[in-house]
Length: 121
Image (cartoon, rainbow, N blue to C red; front, side, top):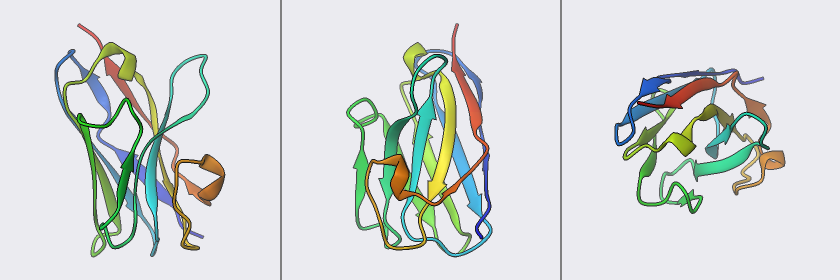
């Protein structure tokens, strides 16, 4: 069983930046970030394979967000730049230990509790 703990959320003004972190208690393969805004379904943001050679982004994240990982620390990061009010959501870290990767939430076995990101002036 792998536990995931997110950190780094908070309140930021439009155009600002935040860096989210997610520490895993054990070895993982693909890791991803999803988000859920009030009244909306959870949506994919970005994913990264264990080797970090492959990364995938949603259309809304591409060009503004960057996912990275440090396997020595079992940690994945999400650097978010040029934040917009519509990025406001609870951001969840997800991990897979079976070699799956992709944008579907059902591919990921483990989930964190989420961290709130609010973009507002």
